[in-house]
Image (tube, rainbow, N blue to C red; front, side, top):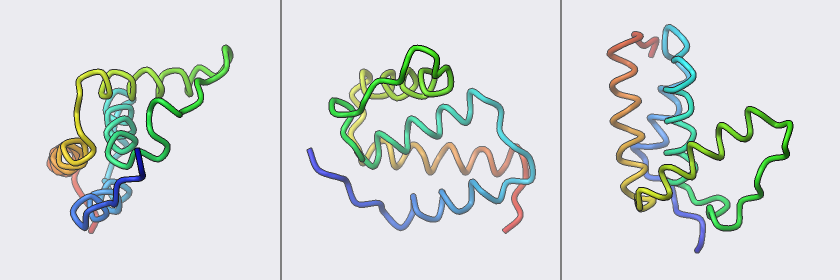
Length: 97
């Protein structure tokens, strides 16, 4: 599998996510991370190294990405969902843009 090109919509959503008025909670951040990784396929999930035993943050990120991957979301679907999640976070937390 190759790296999936990012759409203009997801590139804007990534920038917008950095300009929220408040930081999303951990679950929301993990959702964004997993959708971004699935949407970019960089590296593809099957080739991604598993985090070490004591890397708790890495393990949480890997588990979240694994869940999205197991749901069978395509890269395009993940990018579309990422944009929707960011738009919801903009409404929830406010946006400085």
